[in-house]
Length: 318
Length: 148
Image 1 (cartoon, chains in turn green, brown):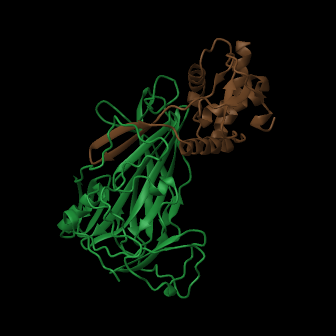
Image 2 (spheres, each protein chain N blue to C red):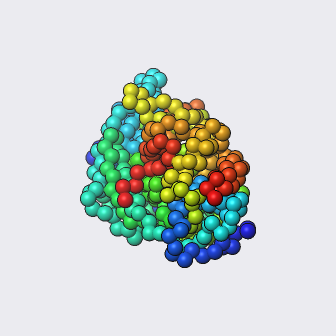
Image 3 (tube, rainbow over the protein chains, first blue to last red):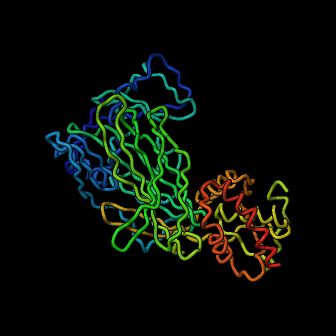
């Protein structure tokens, strides 16, 4: 197997990857090798996510999450519980605000700058005869690393799964009444990256009420168990923000076979104040079957405004 | 009346205003047609879409920019609005169409009409779209009757 090590800009991810796109319908022998999936995190060197992961792995923090260019540590290098946050990344790809994007393409300013992606098909071979592909209608990616082998759906299927994949937080207000934010997260321990996932929050404004839909997408690593998920509505204040409602989401598991979890719609409260508001998605998560527990860095929605008794709207600037 | 396509086609007259692409506002129009009169609501072409605002945040730095509205954006909007309509018991709006509403006399814009309705519904603690629909069925006929 080709066990490559990414060392650019100090990245020390043990990332040995074989990517094989296998078209659906392959039904091969034995047991799916997803029991101990490896960290096949596609992290472009120099991206905000890579910068954050560098910092976490060099410090040998024992429980950490990189999200939106920020590092959140819940167990330090000595294994002590902590709530340490660092802003560690610069944005090497910030688009020129004066330059409109190609309207024909979905906006993805986070396109990797470095084409040296080690996940190139054909770099290594794999014995496909030992895998059973359960995804009957999708291409899949088989990845082998020092931690084992995993099978996952091939990325690039839809907008949610391809947009903003480099560790920043991205958002769009599609019109005055609907906006989405997405964050791409990697988490790990003192040995490096364990896995990664995406979180997306869609906000719809209905008169003086917000409603939310949260989607989780498994990207790599072991199956993930999410608990304590909630969206909190926050009203912006001069001195401090106040809560305008807290809305729970049931526990969920995402994995290589059930890689997307669309949570049920949440309905916010009537927003009576002439004020600005935003929503915050937060959660705890842990690889299934481990005692670890990570805290997700909160994902904020875009800020909306509810003037007088008029409808709440997002700024569109159009 | 069971479908949006049962409504008359908007002929470009200024007696009606386009209803913004919001599930809640489309529901108001549907309920006007259902509980006041179908002649007050028409179906027509979508007005031109404004640009989409995008942003990207890394650590504390946020960059914003605009881009043109795409078909993919349109699909996201339609899906969300039709879901809201479905939850309220209304049929989905056909893709590529917009709703045009005759406002009550004395009301000059959809924004103003919605502001009135928001005020009227403020104390009712409405959460689910079904609850909004029930309250609007009660409020809308009175509002149009008062105007008439």
